[in-house]
Amino acid sequence: MILEGAIMKDHCCILNSIIGWNCVVGEWSRVEGTPTEIDPNVNHATTDNFYLFDEQGRLRPSITILGRDVTVPSEVVVRNSIVMPNKNINRGFKNQILL
Image (cartoon, rainbow, N blue to C red; front, side, top):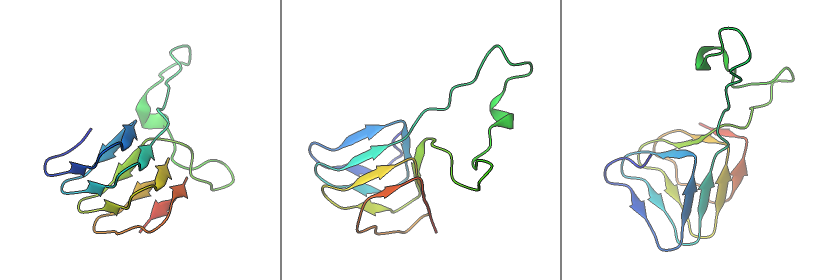
């Protein structure tokens, strides 16, 4: 999902992600998440019982979310992360929450 005002530069790749308002994703950058699958064989399977963190406190792989006005520079990979608004990241991240 790409929200209004977001700019996707040439050759960037966006998969399983939410790109916030007025974000900029640089050339050859990759913003990628891992979709959450719900097991239909489990009783009462819903997204309500999906937890962001595993038993060791690590962020589980899930979609990537860029908040409003986030800038991802060229040639950077952001995977399975949540980036809060107004961040200019300067390197790649995986399984992180950037406050």
